[in-house]
Image 1 (cartoon, rainbow, N blue to C red):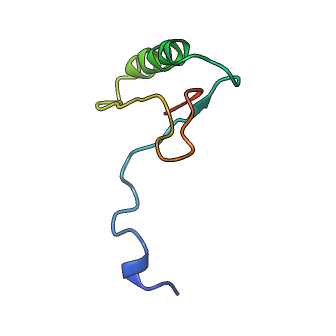
Image 2 (tube, one colour):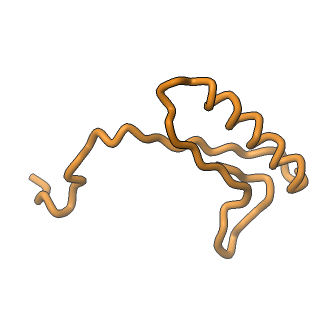
Length: 68
């Protein structure tokens, strides 16, 4: 059995992550439009209260064709 300190205390946090990847060479502006469209679709779901989006993975291997 895994000790409690190695498992989350609350397993039903009611959150999820969506990652989007566009074709290589997609511009920042085009990827931003894709993210905005995905956000608009998600905002239409009444149960979603908080939403955060961004373009680029961050860190040393960041790319503009990735968003979440």
